[in-house]
Image (cartoon, rainbow, N blue to C red; front, side, top):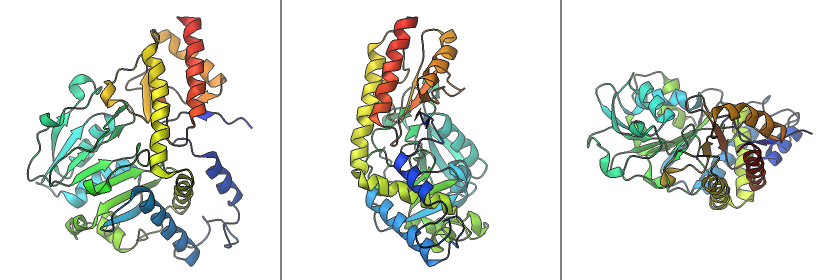
Length: 360
């Protein structure tokens, strides 16, 4: 077996025990005598699994009863537009706080359907910090305020929930959901692509306050209408059955390993170890303001660009994969999602120390 420590930003590593269980159940799931991908999503076995996965997610995140949990398709990118379609019709202002690539993309997609205002942006500082809350210019009548709590590419993360008063707060939590405790009641909508901390790509989990569903317009196709999906328990059409099943296994794994609070402690320890070494080194640099550094995605650079290729070749040979930084920022990036064990980060730091000693 040649599995490595996988630092991919997404699709990302899954817990090995989850993969092994999925492997063992691939041909025959439970008492179905068939794969979970081969049975009806309206049958009692699949419905029971779907209900349990929702219950487990509610327990993990302490989701209040007045929030609906949806298991949707399309990836978070589809929902950049679909959220505006449902909650901010043409002519209605929607405020966006942009702290990196994905916030920019969300605003751009929403502009096709709503009057998007950039209430605050970190672009002037090359997305290395979070604009202070006092500098945000929010419209008191905005349909919602959208932000990205963790920017996967730039490695910038909010470590508290911004106060936007009575305006519905919409969060793209694709890369930090379930990584630490969060107060769901402070949000109008939380949505997340599954391929980082939840499971397989192609699934989107959405947590939406019920009163907001009344805004969903009746003159859009039902397949795009969140209220219709909620009324049909996420089965308006055939869902991503395997993705839903795999998410349920991850939720069980999280509960068995201490829940979200325990994940938060583990993730802080992993991030502290890697940032601590980078800060102590004259060889590696992280550009992000310390108060805004992501626990999930750690970008770093080497002192000379010509060292990038040999670093990547050697690090993969050492059993550490997917460390190349995004083309938008270059350098390296280590993603430390829930499935990455502390031992993987220790191995990375050990390699980094050796590489620096040989190339400094």
